[in-house]
Image (tube, rainbow, N blue to C red; front, side, top):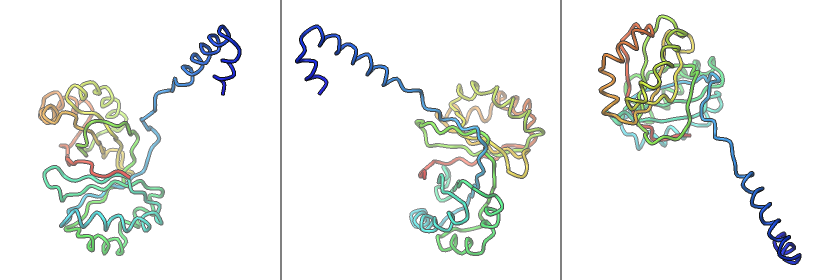
Length: 231
């Protein structure tokens, strides 16, 4: 409508209005870059277990979503092991840690897991993630690494100083934190953008020195997996 009204008014007026309109539209399209990092602590529960058949287990897991929600537990990520695709990692967000602990021990959950084809003894970890990066990246391969440190604050400072070193070796951080009840037990989730570089870095003296400087007291326990579903 604005175009037609200006056209009826003559040439010079039309040129000025068109120019002003273009300037205004350009201003409107300048959007602030999206913030993808989260530094507000988030309680989560991570479960690692083996299943007889993933295709049968996954629908069974989704069927019990209402039970999880009733306990303040929200589905977040499912991953499958790189070495054994029937090894499953399930990460959920937790509203109430007391309820989550009780839920993990509920006999009803055990029955539901058995019905879904879970074999062996599942491993439950209640963690507090203090950093998350939700940006879309080009790799679904993840490493969940756990280890013990002398002091959380000292480790975190040293770890942040090693950011460029990790990037140079094909590794980018997705999340890190510690066990909810023990901040000396670190939980680190990274994405592997270049697996060859990352695996070489795991064995390098550079990483060994970085870990020593950060006060790491145990060997890293790594679970490598591929993200197959996000909620």
